[in-house]
Structures are given as C-alpha cells and as structure tokens.
Image (tube, rainbow over all chains, first blue to last red):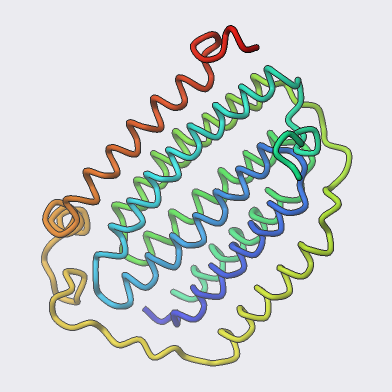
Length: 101
Length: 173
C-alpha cells in the first residue's frame, strides 16, 4: 500500500469535478444522468480508499448503499426521460421549461 | 509497482470521464463510461475490495449501463450540436472544486490513523472481504439494508408507473 491516500482523494475530486461540469454544460438529458453517475462513482472511490486505509469495512457497506440509490435513480430517471420524450419528442433540457420561473 | 498500477487506472479513469462529458454522441459517452467502470473496479481490487469490484462490474457495467444504452437506442437521439449556455457557472464551480483538489494536493500527507483493531480489514485477518462485508451489513447495518430494499421497491413501482402509458392521466393528456 505505497500509494498515499491523497492520490485517491485527488482522483476522486477530479472525477467529481468532471461530473459537475458535465451536468452544467450538456443539454442532452441522458448525458446529464451519466454525469451524475460519474459523481456517484467519485464518492465511491473515496469511500473505498478510506475504508481500506482505515481498516474499517463500513465504508464498503456505504458504497453498497450508494449503488442501490444509483440503481433506483437510473430506473426512475430513465422512466422520466421516456415519459418526457413521449410528450415533447425531445431530450434537450432547453425544451423543458414548464417548471422554470 | 503499486503506484504505477494506480497511475494507470487513475489516468484511464480521468480520460474516459472527460470523454463521457465531451463526446457528442450519447452512445460513445455510454461506452466510455463502461471503460471507466471497469477501471474503477480495477482500482477497487488494488484497494482489497474484491467484492465491490465484482458488484461494480455486475451492477454498474452489466445492468445500469445496459439500461442507458437501451434508452439511447430506444429514443434514437441525434447528435447534439452545441453545449449549454451555462459556461460561466460551470467555470466558476469547476475552479472552486479545482482549488479544493489543489488544496488537498498541496497539503501533503493526510494523517490517517487506523481506527484500531476492530477493523475487519486489518492486516493478518483471515476473513475474506465478502465475508466481512456480509457480517457488518447484516448486523450493524441491518436496518439501512432493509430501507435500501424499500428504496428499490419504490423505484421499481415508480418506473413502471412513469413509463407505462395510460395508468396516470389518460384523461388529462
């Protein structure tokens, strides 16, 4: 275990950063959901790294829960996308302004 | 050697994560996310989290990504022409996060002290990774585990109701 934990934190921070930027600059709603997956994976990397370095398995259990929530989010999110596409024939977020003030 | 493996995995993860955001075609984005999931799983193996590596490949790469690809194919989306006009917000948030990463990088070694002998991952433990996770999951975290199953049930019902035509609002639409 010669890699310092700082490296894992930097990697996780960079992946999270890419996810945030992806959510903000893309218009395709599927890519936005993929960017959310990127952010969830960044937190998972952090969890596993700290779990390994602290010698405590609870971090890996939390990754398990994060994975459950990610699966639920994907199922509901993709169902919403299909319902939206049925109504608007578009998956561009600029076309959905019903809830915008 | 260990750090060489880490830098290989980290480099591929960063590059493919950038490609997910940067590529125009959603299918290519999903496929580069697949490559990223495999390398994250490899990173888990180097961190002695073999169970999570298997789960990462089976659930993320096997189930979630196939669902994404299925929806992309179903909707038959065309290529996207341009990025969103939220560039300034993205730059601001990106710079803030980048500053935090740089702060972590410049602060040097984080003093991480092992929590003591109660960690099942401690050196010299004869218990396997899957076994120790199962033990903690079904004793300490039994209630959150049940709540997770409830979340999955709610998501399943919600997905069926949202995507099925005519259950809700067949009169309203």
